[in-house]
Length: 135
View (cartoon, helix red, strand yellow):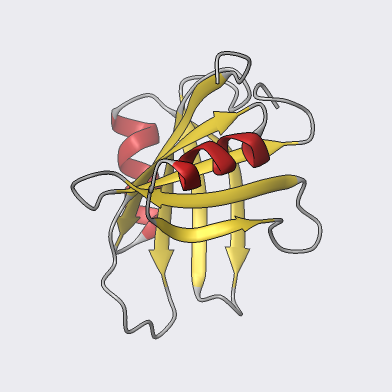
């Protein structure tokens, strides 16, 4: 596993009011909006905020759940991985539980993604972008 590179990418926080949260982090804590995504069909509005470009700095992913979801809403953190398919094989061999098996995300995105649980049940997103861990 030493050939696989890792980089902390983001921490996701569920928020009740996206505009209020973006205002708090930008106006009061000096962060900038680095990316926004609205998914009406999926019932989410998303803003990424931070102190630098998402490709080189960790950011906060703020998600407003606008849909009617039955499952409990919790946060996660994400790690960029240089070879996610290889890491998934290693994790499967070690008996790690997966919240989401390895998959390519929605059309128009450029990443592999998988979610695992740590030993205490906290969810970790693992992703690999085609441009590398700094894209």
